[in-house]
Length: 64
Image (cartoon, rainbow, N blue to C red; front, side, top):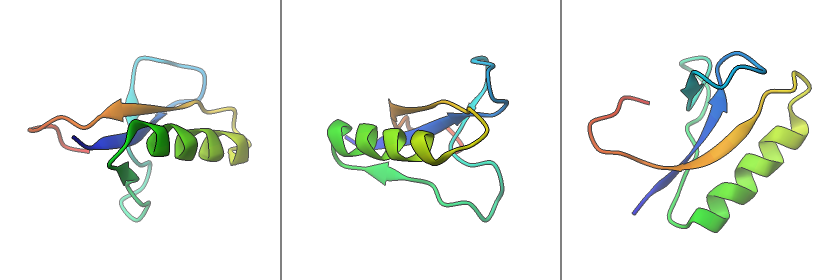
């Protein structure tokens, strides 16, 4: 099972979550939920926009 870090597309709005904002941004995937949650917390702490990040189970057939 793979896990992926998702972020709010628009800071403060929970309707749209994305894996990256720009095509050149990395997509963070991990083998364990703990690793993914740690990276999401790290990215959220470094983001000055107030955007929230979360760990999510990667789903087949979804374009990230």
